[in-house]
Length: 209
Image (cartoon, rainbow, N blue to C red; front, side, top):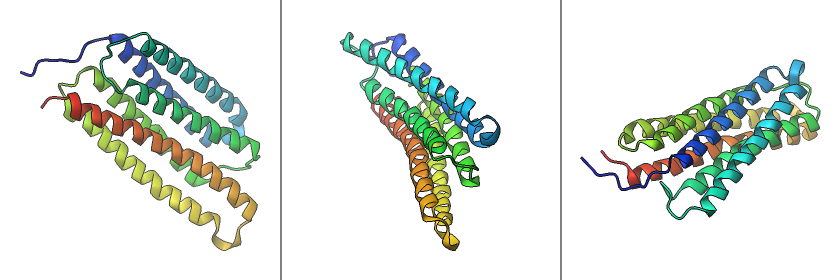
């Protein structure tokens, strides 16, 4: 049996898991925002903003602890925290744009992309929780594979959405607004995949079996 060489500091894992859970919360809030946009749009936007602030707080706590700690369980804590914070930042920016541009109705593709993001973040959270025990790398990698599949699904939905924007002589100004909105949400999904890639690297570097 392989001897564990990674020093343990459960507080870092606690914080990373808090950050991942917060991302899931934000993604679920955005999915609710997308599906109930007409009825509760601004109320849900406020909840997303609060979740983004919570994400900042957790990230700052992680960075502060890193600055005061010489030995960490894994070297990749800072990029993991930063990428997870980026996810919520993009979600909040997307929410702000939808309200700022006074979008009247959510597109079907936006709802689909919100669903992809929510499912991808759930897989991400499970992968992050797997970092506590790297003796079962296959479990962690399965979550990463699913994230990659969902990111590809999101890309297809995004391409279809962009194609619809310029089809049948639609309003160019509206098309440009939606193009920016899709960019932000697609970036959020991409950041989930970035987290997945970092976790895969951790598994390859430290995992056994």
